[in-house]
Length: 204
Length: 404
Image (cartoon, rainbow over all chains, first blue to last red; front, top):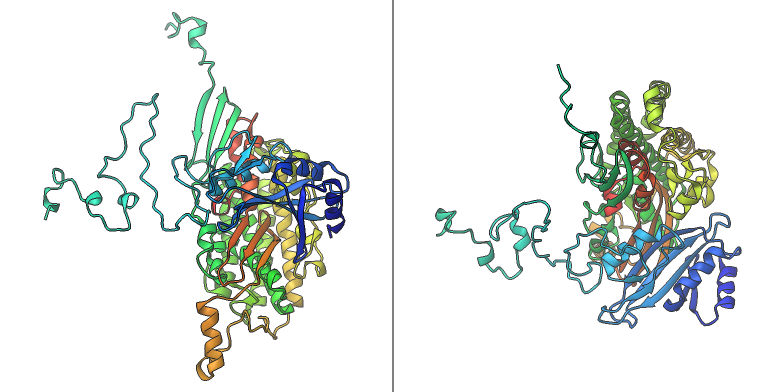
């Protein structure tokens, strides 16, 4: 389907295309992350490719590999009806320096998908205008779709956000509120014990 | 009596000129779904908007990595909970693409008929809610009643009204019931009647038309750049429908048209859904005609299908096979696939990565809603604050699918 396109990419960017393969009818190019933006721009503007839509952009975590993450983009051409998957491998094994250029300026759809990949995987898209968390809240610790994020991990209870303009007190005292936010796995009872001054009957 | 503001100067009477920030949602009485929209207003005009999603994030993609491939079905059900059957079929097709199997013809017609019914229920909900939010409560009740008829069929077929978990890799959980064709035909006729009545009630209504026409216009270029698919993209005049462009199952063998809008305003998005429901009815009729009354529904492949119960109880091979598939899960060969189907809101993609074990390595659900909602900011900027309601309604944001 998009075999000719893969050949064209190889020919135009001999140093950037690292490997190509085709599985289940999906043609894939693995490219150098440094030229991610150039290749994407080429795919969008070249008349032979004419990739008018960025259908999907996500990441996959392979903790045993170096570079650790794969950023995966799926392109679709409305006029030609062909698809292409483009991948780039980024990040060190510790997952602290994961950088790839943003393609937000080429497709508006990249905006939220890059924010999602940042949110869930911690991939930093350089040049993104507004790289905030999107599905999770700002105080969330870690990036949950990484393989080393324990699925049972419990996030700390979020402090009441301090908004200076409105004069409000914090919603919970340290021993009030939703107890599941403070649960631990090793059954430490003290955090959940009610305050004996307020609940004298519960001290038994 | 003297006027009260006699001593006030003109400057004091005027409203403050600073932009006002208004927070709509996450649970706003005039909006459905849990999405928060922070809008900056000058008078009544929105100059800036920030759409914040994620209130329904339940971490499905993480959870999918912790069970077997079959255990993913309940999660995809709960993505788009208005049309779960389409998600079920979409995920089945993705797994089957990786396994290289094709389900029997009877199952394909069955999946299509159920899928189109689900699409109708999706569009009925969207258009009904849109009308209700603009004050037309009656059509909402009619459409929800029609949707209930579809869900009755689903309940009859799968046992569950809403979250069916009815798809399986290599087939369906159960063959069609004896009365399926009859009830489906009768229901489709009734729904078409409801649609006629709804059109008669709404399309001559000046208030309804004024609230929709020319509001929230999205150009085709914008829609394409935003990654919009489905009815929202087609309302902007781009005739991209996966069922036509890349037919899967038997969509290549049925006759149907792809309704396309012209201006890309809220009214077009409303009408594209109405017209699409009529096309759904056409497809369902053809599916029911061509679906055989007997024959296998599930693929005959020992790798994915559970053996018949008498074999499980009477032969050691059957017991072992049953045990392996239930305990270890069916094995999908290592590799990756991107499979796409036309769901209620557009292209529902599954990017699956398998390491060859019984547990998915990565299940990426490409939610059509997520990208459609990302365009809300662009749609409402420059509109009046009251237009947020029809604009948001016309996008049919399904929280479960958007946030996963």
